[in-house]
Length: 341
Image (cartoon, rainbow, N blue to C red; front, top):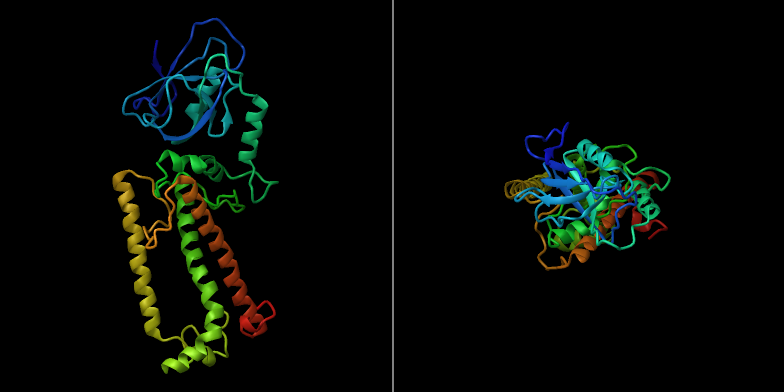
């Protein structure tokens, strides 16, 4: 007998179905030999069944053709290990179904193979793994915000699942679970914040290099090219909000060029995002398709590592440029003349 799950907001879409088993009771949990992480949107299109009557857990009976779960690495017979980070191996079938109903529009599943007589997974290890997921790497004493925890579970597996593609928004490199102010209220907001972080980080990396080089070479280049020495007119300091000189020392046409270039970059980014919406592909924040030297790795692990390096260097550069600005504002000397240089 098959019935659509009662109480689900997706009854008409057949989010998933449940099958009751009438086999003899076996209280042991289902054996799991390997597991895979999958992120799905409702309706899932899964048909669930009891492993055995009275036995903890649930498994996939079948997948509906053309559903969101089809072709995503889930197979008939797979056991549900966790739903949105919550261990399912020790829960009753009814509890698993209730957990699935309460899940949001996006569901993070961990499923495992059930090879029959293989040794069951150690429940303590499963619980310990989920506990680690729930803890912030940046603030180990604090719980990881739910949106960031869901993203962290995707990891490199999501990049692998999409063929190592550039457009995999399921996993954001550099996610250390740091959001003490709770700014990432949902997945959409998280992607917006990551997009802004990457843009600021890229500008900061350019500024972190350009700031000391300008103070070292500006006078020489200005003299060589017969141009005004901007830094000399600003007391040898780089123009900034704290140092001044942004409006009176810098040519207004420079700011016109900055505005036009920024508008063009934003247009390219918006077109990329619109294209992802049209094709149904995930949108990766900061992806402008810019790789003239072909440095972006071909494999998923290499790509995830490179994305992480960009984020980390951007964060460091933002701190560095902020430090430059405050150092010069307080000491009133160029950073290249300060002891750190």
